[in-house]
Image (tube, rainbow, N blue to C red):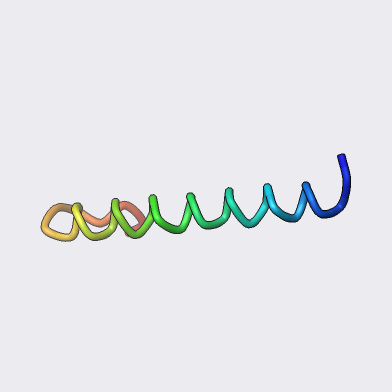
Amino acid sequence: MSVYESISLMLLFGTFVLALLTYIDHHKKIKTPLYL
């Protein structure tokens, strides 16, 4: 696996995780927060 491929994978994974966390935080705002 080349450096470019690994960097692309990390960026894609990071974007996915960020979108998922934003989605969860947006839809669970009424209920109990996950972190506290």
